[in-house]
Length: 451
Ligand SMILES: *[C@@H]1O[C@H](CO)[C@@H](O)[C@H](O)[C@H]1NC(C)=O
Ligand SMILES: *[C@@H]1O[C@H](CO)[C@@H](O)[C@H](O)[C@H]1NC(C)=O
Image 1 (cartoon, rainbow, N blue to C red):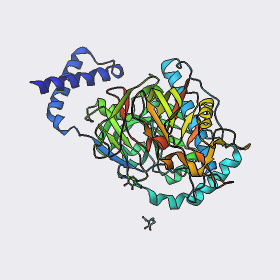
Image 2: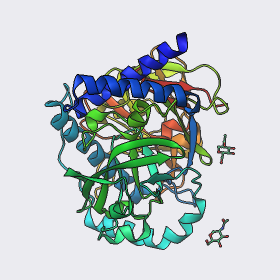
Image 3: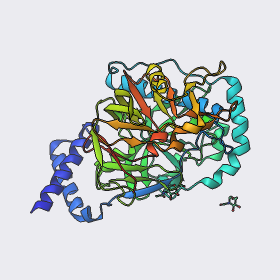
Image 4: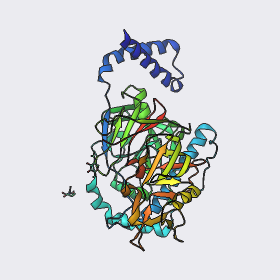
């Protein structure tokens, strides 16, 4: 008799989650619906997927093919990251009525015009050759019949958006586009979606609900945006849009993100996902972790903040076996390339790296540091008394400086993103070095050694 009880518990969960959205449903209708859901689950429980893996391509790094640090791209990445998190904080404030202590909405960061045009020229030259690196075996489809898209899976934001068929930006011409009128399950919703990325344009568009399917994992009536303007920042990104995997609190639409909708609708086995980031064969595992890709033990850390980010505290940064910084907070963000810390803490960190020096230019401003390429530091992060998660040298080293091939630039950058007191942002450069687990059920982030 255990199974029906579990399933009933499951069905009640479904109802309680649906309640706020369906206030017009009367209790008697609710009971019938509950019973119906219970029966449906008895029939379909065995078909709940065990977990589904999505292969995707890693974002381009910041090292040119000749081994030189791509400073233009790195500066563009900083502007993008600042504005992405600025928007998250704007969303958080609007959704919850306040920010948490230490959080601050900074001014919109702006990419210098000269840099903008230089990057655009480069992108246009590279965009064709880029396509080949692509490995996407897990497209996202939306609608009935399905329309296919390629999305970036971003643990540092919470909305799903793709280009709309009425997108007028030239950036959209290379992308797959959503046509709402071609989907029988599409519904237009009130409101608009807007994110400013600081390159004089915005990503904005209309809000819809439709069926979203990421290789067999379905979310019905999922809220998303079909954008009609798309900033040039996305031109060389082979992805059409973004699938945010953080919490509703930082959602611009203030709606349940794809993963949570799919889980609440009973379409995922577990309320967690595993993220394997690699130079090739990167994989997102929905509903569990892919035990072929990581060693057995997962070191979990309970989230230290309820801001809507995947944030864990009690962190240390080490250089070799020397502790450089201790007791700070970290947000794990797959949609960011680099690692960011508050400028004074990053200064402290590099003061312990032999031969390190500020690598600033008057044109760009501060943030980067260089060190001798012959002695790239062994950098590790540790949470509490956990394992020391060491970064491979090639993950920390962004390449030689343009001016001096004996000096290399580090992936840890000093920038104040407004994310809170002593909050660091750990992006792909860190995530390449561990199997990362994002666990909604336990409200935690976990790390496991790679298999
Ligand atoms: C790259 O793409 C071109 C054009 O689609 C194709 O002809 C070529 O075979 C591809 N190369 C590889 C290595 O996949
Ligand atoms: C990770 O990437 C490296 C370098 O491309 C590759 O050799 C390795 O097989 C990849 N790992 C997995 C599990 O695919």
